[in-house]
Length: 325
Image (cartoon, rainbow, N blue to C red):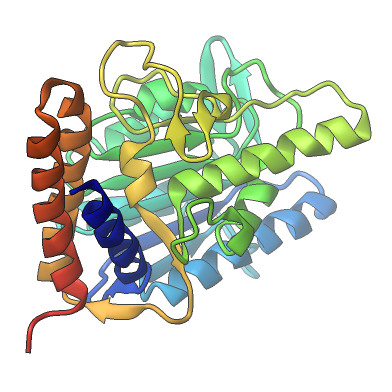
């Protein structure tokens, strides 16, 4: 039974590495904050360009905010207002596909409030949470700025993945994590499980490793420590809680560990992926969730019962890729 299961697992990995939804309706909102200096503007725009390329490859709707506008006046809406209007529009439209919010820029932390710096009024975690309060869409929120840690607690929730470049508001030095993350989303070296796909979890871990290596090579004190939250407890998990893509420490809250949903949310695929329908994609998500539940219950199950159940789920997953004639 176990040898048969291993064969199925190998076949399934090959199948799943070649899947992509053919009806993706995701929205990527890429927000470039106030650069402060020209050198930062150049950096931020290059990071933004990488995210745009990744989003367009996924067939997603791409919305960019914060780039320098040629003509501005007192009547020109602020970037915060433009973002609020855009998010209000996207959350009002029926859509079960993910809404991605990518914040690239600087952050500040004063009087216990973390802000992302925009041209005009800044954006706090509290204000963003209010804008998104009625949204039922799955959310991926990535804040690549300094002092971004408090955005975890402020925006954590069900069906939400939140990544911040820092673990606390007092990490206020310029953050390089956004650079490495924008590279990781399209880097095959980030594909830790070798399935020809880069998940959010894999990109998060690769970027964290590259950021840590930067400080080590430069002989500098580390001033940024990224966090990931996708279990809704608002605490976040640092990258050293993982070995590869596998969690090696329990959640602080005692609940489900972070990383399970982020491991299933794909950022980029290899060029040889095959298209699947939205219905197949939805069923695939259900089956992947069932596998996760089985693994949690493994210690309480009979060995044969566990592998029989796992085999059934994996065979159905394989049939999504190779339906019978």
